[in-house]
Length: 151
Image: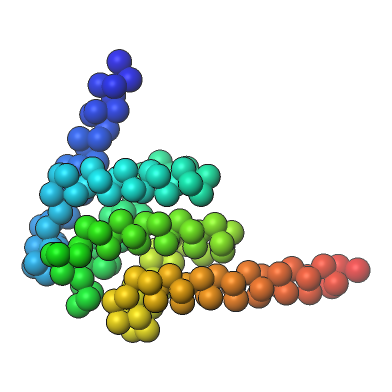
């Protein structure tokens, strides 16, 4: 019973994400059903690894819609880039203690990827690790100041 439910859910996800090919094909980017299955496996592994639960695929859809316009993404690296972006995203969500909304964080990632990193995922990771550290420090400072005001 559960296998058939899981299978139906997986097919619905694949269909929903394949529909985004209508938008991305104008940039020469197409995901195959196999690409999507692999991406969902990578996403689920990242969620598990960071102890997170996500019920929908809105983050994945946002990645596809936002990053398809990057001049640094082509058909050769499209699927692997999306996979790596999931890992970076969930790392950042944890490191920023969910204080930044999903869409805002994805757009920050895209701007950094295009403007500061020249399409380098390694550089993106490095820059966003630095961002997360600064964000946490600022958050701790604000919490500390808030506690002092409460005295």
